[in-house]
Length: 227
Image (tube, rainbow, N blue to C red; front, side):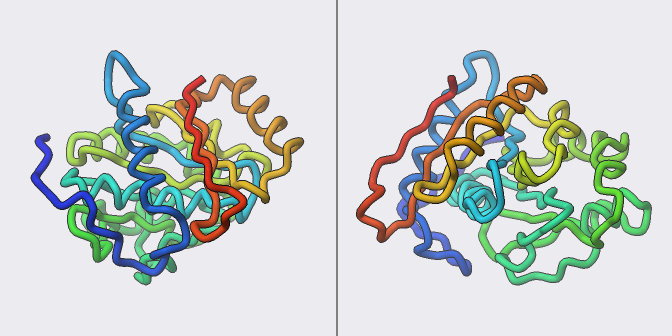
């Protein structure tokens, strides 16, 4: 799919404006694109060690960067335990991916407009007591494969590594994971445990993104690595 000519300096226009430095996510997007030599990472999962470390904001902002650059982009909220995507985009959480996998709605029903040009969203939907059953189902695998043919990029918001083992069950449907570390929040021991778990589980980590509050002068450096 071809990229359109757009004003890449245009800022995002949803509720999280100004929380983090917009330029960080442009850098992150560029590094993700260059992190794979043979083929592009087009289905990207975002995770972190624990909660409240910026993974959902990062997933939404990265999705928006792709969309603002003219790519047809899809954000999927696969944090089936504590979804926030619908609140960030201020849309209804009904008819989401759990409802689709349970056979209650069609694919057309779950794809929603985000309010950002070129960016669609699939919300979590009904909270399920059996999230692993959804994540390991053939139906979600077939859906992601079908969506690959319709979108330039898909960004998936996932459960934090130390909260549940969900990332392992989606490893084979994504091209790689970006691990979010929030400066001044993520504990070193938690970071070490989470990274070791991902490596032990043979999860493909394509990058580690260190983020900081935009107005916090104590943390002004941004680092990305695919080691």
